[in-house]
Image (cartoon, rainbow, N blue to C red; front, top):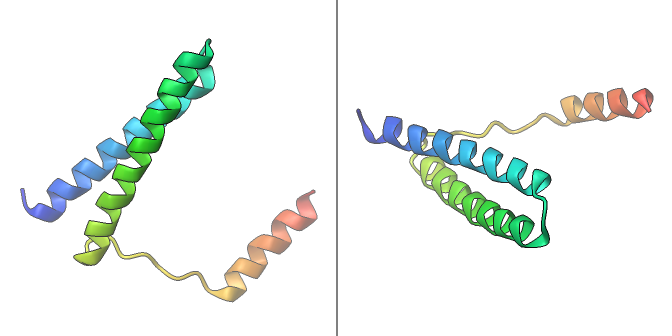
Length: 82
């Protein structure tokens, strides 16, 4: 397993953890539990961001720029749906 594959696995795992913490926060029954999940979620999101940045810096996760025309099409689609 090379470094890129290892980082992809870590990123996917971290994204899964974020999803679990989000649902834990939404479904929490008390303010203390809600706060604990929110704190954990925030920490995990920061970790996910750092992993993404490292991958992007190595060229392992290239983000594609959205074309202005495509953005306008999506805006119009959702504006007319409301």
